[in-house]
Length: 407
Image 1 (cartoon, one colour):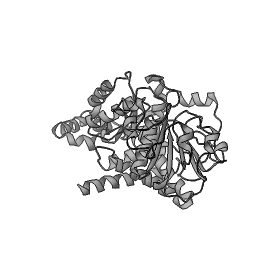
Image 2 (image 1 turned 180 degrees about the vertical axis):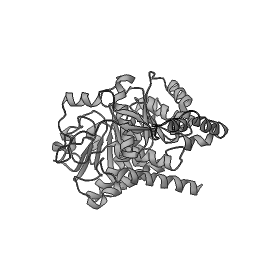
Image 3 (image 1 turned 90 degrees about the vertical axis):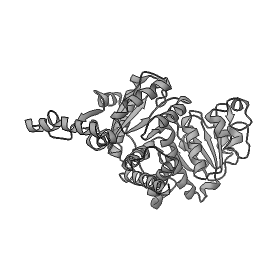
Image 4 (image 1 turned 135 degrees about the vertical axis):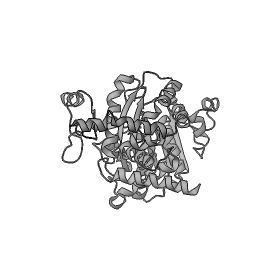
């Protein structure tokens, strides 16, 4: 069996931007859902039925019962990704519930098939209890080969991912965290080159300390960026903040101990004074006056969707490189550059976990695809570039092989 995408991609204008879409077109495209099941074997004769179903299928079931490892090659489970959500943090819509989140998860499954050639099904759950979600997936484990967590609110998403990685013997990744982080690192790697800077020496401000913001900070630190400052709704995150000190088990408290090496306190103005890079992964708006405080030839990634923290036409007054999460502006930083190839590479290599080394390899692979044509308006390849997923999957699989060899 395979999952297929029913409807084609959105129409685009001649310059590659998404054309204006009507409500009629959007709802017609979703009528009946965006996915269907198709058979990979013929079912046109009695012989076909005897092979695919009874009595032939019984021989396959007996073989798997005798040797469970055969399920990896005689069923689709080993290559099936489940896209799992509880509907608590969907796009910019917030906590809209499981049923309302399903169109998004169907779309995610369609992207897995289109860009990673991986079968995928959405699973939306009518519970927000972390342990119940884990129990559900543990019980369903024989049916799938990897878990893509999606649109689950922070801070629960951190606990869920960590516990699920321990509970399951297959790749698990919360894409809102790590897919975003991988593509941001790829884009920043090339933006640094465009502006003749070393990645390691950048002074980076990340606005937003939820799932995406903390993951971005983590991968930048892992890549060697030494000066990363995070902002949340209360201002700069640092070791001295009383609200963080009182919650030593939190992700914010942990990242406070490993970021902000200059001990900055205050708000956006203090954080952005003398900064090289602004990365927005929250709905907070960036004041133009604060942009003026940044270093010359600044880099601005305003990734909030659909409304960036600052519009590109404002950001370009002060920044040499500007990126958003939208397809109608240059430099779209889109998770689809990362997650299909990461999961494909992990499954191809038989990995049981998605490691930091695999994520760094994915970011390098994405960045390298744009190197030959680098410019201020081209720091990452297009999400529609057919080279991306194969390059990412190969890099991830190579990272797995290197780790095995090093053991």
